[in-house]
Image 1 (cartoon, helix red, strand yellow):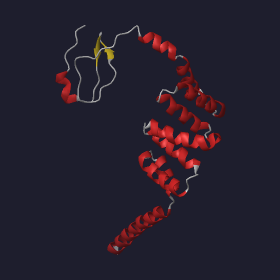
Image 2 (cartoon, helix red, strand yellow):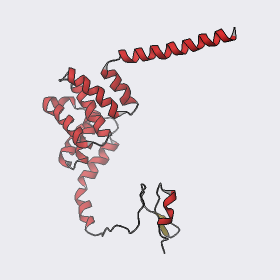
Image 3 (tube, one colour):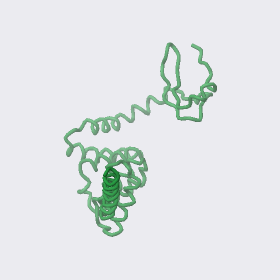
Image 4 (cartoon, one colour):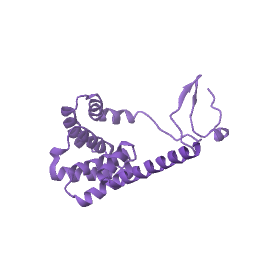
Length: 193
C-alpha cells in the first residue's frame, strides 16, 4: 500500500512539472519577458521582448521595456537608442516612470539638459517626487561641483588588491580600505598616523 501511494505521488509530481513546462511554452514572448523582468533577469527578458518587436515593429510599450532593461543593465547608450526610437515616433507615450528612466539614462551619459527635461516631465506625473527632485538638484549644482574640483589633488595610492575595494573609512585615527580579498591582506601596508 505504501509503495503504491509513493508511486502515485511521484507520478503526480512528474505530471505537475510537465504540465508547468507545457504552460510555460504556451506563454507569449511578452509574458515570458515580463516574468523574467519581474525576476530581475533583464538580459533574458530583452531576448523575448526583441522577438515581440520583430513580430510587432510598432509596439512602443515593448520598446520602452527594452530601454528600461538596458538601463537596469547599465548599458545606457543602448537604452538611449531604444528610448530615442520611441521618442521619434511618439514622445507622448514616455510618461511617468519611463520619463524618469529616460532622464536617468541621459544623466548617466552626461546629457544633463535633456535629462532635466525628462525629469521635469516625470516630476509632474509621479506622486513621489523625492528622487526626481534630488536628480534635478544635482544637475542644477553641477557648476559648483566643477568649481570645487580644482581645489583638490587626486592621486592613486601605491597599494591595491586584485579584488573589489570600497571607499576608505576612518578608523581609530587612521584609514582602512575594505576589500573582498581576505587572502591579500598581507599586500596592504600598515598606515602610520
